[in-house]
Length: 195
Image (cartoon, rainbow, N blue to C red; front, side, top):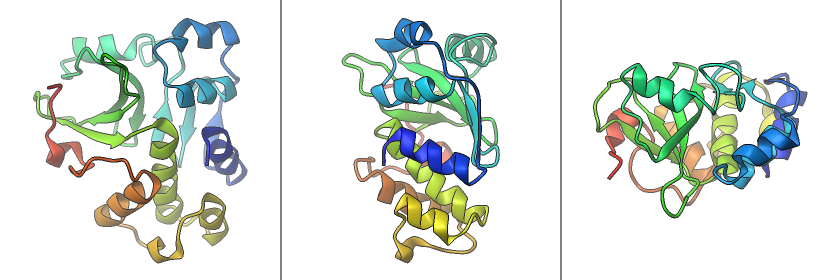
């Protein structure tokens, strides 16, 4: 599924609070650094609260928690955000999520743990659409959004559970994103650094 399809299904299920789309000029302003799936997301909505507040995608600009400012602000607040990471979202616990812009840009999605050490990152997505699909699959089960939603997202019945736990989170993320590395998706356990 692509980003537009996932967002549409979440919106229909009442699991997406969307904003007006970003202007094409704003998308183009950040276009060279934005992974293509995020460009498509911002063309649909300039930020959103998704999955019962368990994923917040920041707007492109306009406040401290925007794609334009979040990385710089997080560094000022003591978060160990590598220079190669652009923060664009946070999880339900407030842990930042960003994409890797390195050279060449990879589009990898990383999450940073709230332990303020340099070894506090995990790769949580190889692309934004795969990342979003994995999170959606987990939270539709955790929030009891119903089997119809799981079917629409293509979640295999063998992965369905009524009370998903951390192991289910990993299984669903890896189903949605087979290109994920073998390390844990929990930044507290993966303990990756910018190197």
